[in-house]
Length: 344
Image 1: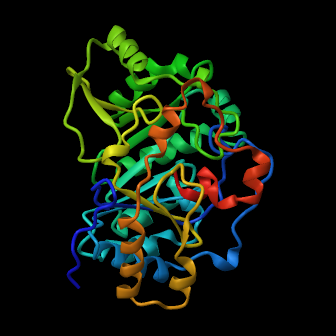
Image 2 (image 1 turned 180 degrees about the horizontal axis):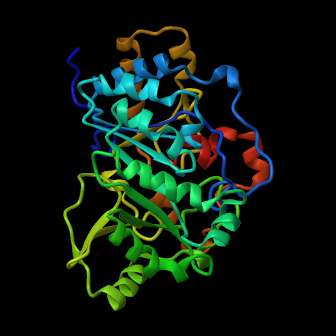
């Protein structure tokens, strides 16, 4: 099938599909899952691997070339390697990646890379064991570091580390985290603390903006120079002479809505065209009903061509009025809006 390349209302193409394979997570990081209890997606509505693959095939007919598996924690999904294998067999996919907290990498790393996974991103906000336990509320840092060692010997591309930098929380590790990543051969990306749904404790006072991050890096490592940007990827990349590269994702202070080419599918088949969107479109019903690849492509096209989201820019425009996006009580009635459900 040869359909025209899609563009939304701002002439942005649909290139990247992020798939949350589960809303469950084995950690409880405060910027994503700060509450004590959650309303989970009904297990009966979670898409099977074959159903996900059929939707991905439809998306590639419309121009999608990048697929990233997320969660919750994707490695909690049983035999995830089977889905990786199915997706790796789709010729149109040029970039097949996964984002994980790393806790289960030791157990499952060999399987997912053997199945065809090309890139890996690990979320890690501290190198201090006690702080890691405090931030995640149940985690063991040593398991993540061991998993990283295992994955580094398997991953065909350099592993990326995502670190949410927060003032008064972990910003005293900014330089040491970067030094560790450069030494170990990882590409660290500092992420500004975002006020997305699920971040019910968000405060603008805790946001460490890109310019401050770069100023501090320059004082310790020398002035970083701009490095080539990876297409429409969110990170601004920089190079440190003699050491390597790192990135900054400035979604809060300097949004990249104008080049955003991402669409998100939740584990139950709800499609979101923006991380800040409260309303998604139910594709799960059509997928479970056995709609054909062509029918799914038509539905995707209808959604994307009407897209006009610029969520991060709208949040930035609120200036001093900017606060949390949603309360915990509101989120309990709208579990699909949660960060860990959308797949971040």
